[in-house]
Length: 219
Image 1 (cartoon, rainbow, N blue to C red):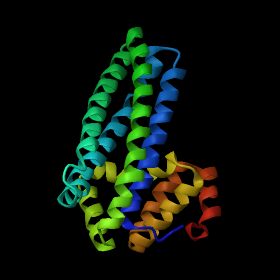
Image 2: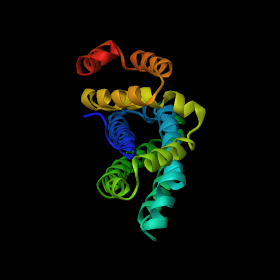
Image 3: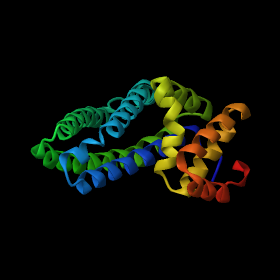
Image 4: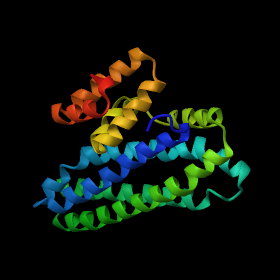
């Protein structure tokens, strides 16, 4: 359903973050050699960079306005962010060790990817069920839009350039079509056309056909 509150766009990023954590966990456990797991490193590096932009964005644009209305509200979420940063740093080092052939690192990587999935699921659920509804209650659509703009400013240009395609590739077709519908309403047509082409190239013909089936204006 289109026409959601501006702050609810965060849900699309959240869905992709959880999906990717689950996929990384699966790939780490499916790897038959340390080197195979080490091949996850570029993917993990992008994931870590996206998480860094997302959490920094929340700490710039989401939590300060909330804390101004609800002191101490953000404390538990900021602790989650620090734990997540530390865990991803460890996972990146383990992936590098795997790429160098360290069998012990592979077992540790597998354990820590389980922890990453559990942490992502828990944190996203809290934000979706507690933070976003409070934002809708406390802030107008205009204020929410300003908060989202501040959050987006935390992302590097490289991550921003890949984000839409990455998000759509990580979520199911229903969610992807809803996300693209929101982007089409928010972006100038010429900008959205470029985004649409990038997404189509990234997700492949079958996934794109599923998206068009749900959102015919993509064709």
